[in-house]
Length: 309
Image (cartoon, rainbow, N blue to C red; front, top):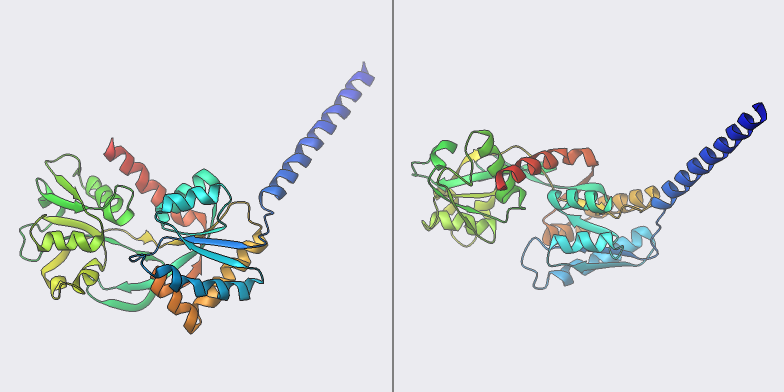
């Protein structure tokens, strides 16, 4: 009997050892990808046009830092990049915070960097000299409008972006909801426009009463419509929204995650490299990041889903 128990214990020990060993092997394999050629993809922050040719010099700069060939390509939307990373066709994606959250959930992709941009004053009419890793959304109305607070938006028409846009829908809609105003109720009508500057213009032209847009959007609109920043003003500013990410595929080795991160930080500090990331991505630099920085996005997404039901 005792021999039987002893044999059973030995067998269990072997099985446990095999299980732990296999788990360790799986873990190592899951984070052991070493690229022979690095593929990078992004969606341009401005009209594509000749933007891909402007991004091409980044290939050479990254290749010099990493010691392997680099291919940079343009995608039409962020969902395509997430899918390409999931199928292991793309190693590095420049993703906004909401797209990163999806990539992490679906593919276990990892954030390595967040973009830095210049902050602004509360009204969004002037850039500060301080680089920050976040931005905000604002709700804009005409300067002499009777809309002075969130409650005044009831029964009004609001220009919005796609419902997946953090600054063009999710953050302002969620914070209105937290103040007791449901954008899908309260006799509010939404009009979807393409581009935050178009939202500002819709208010300026009287097509809508208000607009959801990122802070400083009126400065973009002002390039084509001088003086608009003084006539369309914010009445509400949201909490901080994490800036765009540099995300790598989930199975990339920690060594290569660090190599890519350090290479981009170094490149962004050079005159030539900074010009590329500024023109192509509207980034001014990079700072190291971690997944927990995006828990706020997950929280807002959950509330937004409740609003959209």
